[in-house]
Length: 455
Image 1: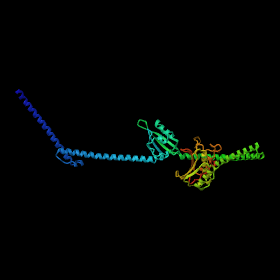
Image 2: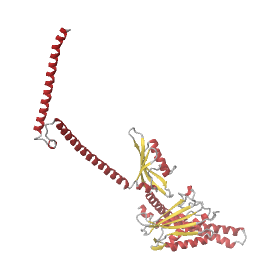
Image 3: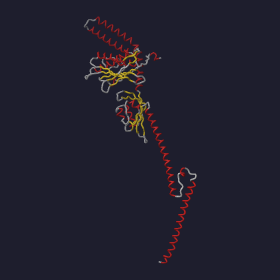
Image 4: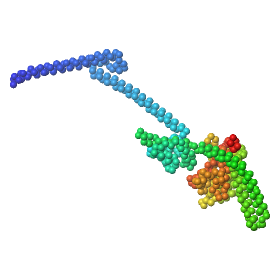
């Protein structure tokens, strides 16, 4: 045991010596590394920038490390400020782009309507609200706003469900105030990343004035054709009717009272008078009108219409409300047009068991390039049959058993010659309404000569 202990003791001593030497070498290396770092730090501080200037000189390694960390943190803070400035500039650029997009959309002359896949209106500009006659369209269902059975609703539904594109469609649209408008529509689907339909974009244009202008041009062309036709047949009709009437009067004068021949003569005279009335009305419609250029004060003229209708249809109360101004035109012809409309309305409600009424309403209409007078003649009668709505201004079309079918055609011609318009529609509460618009300042309407048109 002693020998083993003696032999082990030198080995343990040698191991201790080697461990001490290794520790000394490591400690010396660490000291040299610290001094080398200090020398490099001190030498570099002479040419250093703000980072070195802000770092204090010290022989303490802990202070050196702390100063280095502070410099790094300061640099990170400066980079954070630069990133924040970049983010702020990017946000401002995005806001400017959004404001520009909103301004462009808001000032577009065409209506813009955005509908998502669930059927909600997500965006609508003022032009769309004006064309549709509806305010606050956003976040409302398009089929509730536009009407479940309207053509516009059907087109949007076809775009959302089938992904179809509709270009330059012309549809009729009835506003919540029951105004009929002609709209030009273009509808395109909005596709997502996987080509699914996520919405629809709808562009709207109000073509009502353009459609009315086209109708007026077509009507003037028809007037020219009818004028040419009437010039050829008017004399023939009048001559034939005068001859027939003359012979009928001779037969009636020679026949004894109460005889069958006398009765036949009376019937011939009645028929010739009826035909003469038709020819006269036709010539009123076909012959160019010579309008007097005068200032017509509408209120006294309306009062004359009220008195005339009250005398001819005494059982129907007729009143006038609203504001009536002055228009330039022919007093006699305008009186004839308004009287015809008011008398038709009174006759339509004369048999109403609940009691008929006729209201003439006047309003100042600032729409269009020229201000004008708006006159509506409404009643609570049976209204206009749907199949007759598009034909009531066509010559010789009538729903009356003893009518000539020229009354409303003549009225339309008078108003068009004055630079005005007329529109017929049924009211939601029942009855018909005729809306007349006359400009305050009438533009000269050139009479169309068919001979010049052919040249």
